[in-house]
Image (cartoon, rainbow, N blue to C red; front, side, top):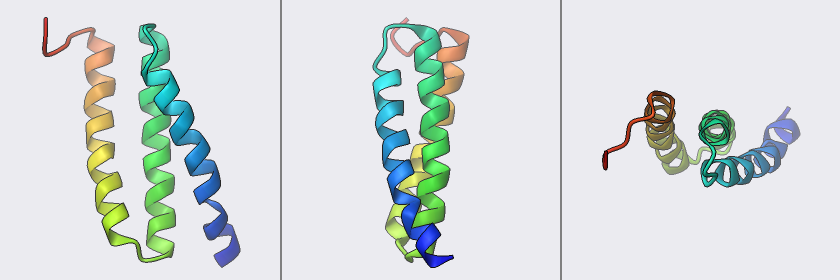
Length: 83
């Protein structure tokens, strides 16, 4: 079980990089997918962080989760702080 939890960091890393690429898109639909991929990566990082007692990582991922939910909602509604 410990090996499985330790292996979670690799898909989490790939998902995080994919999410960053999608969020950087000029296409609204790709950005929306990017936020949801980021949310998935936040959950995986939290699980992995818990397994290795990386509490700062867990706290950071929790904060990023909230930011990504906010970003997904803003992208969905089509509004921005600058409009």
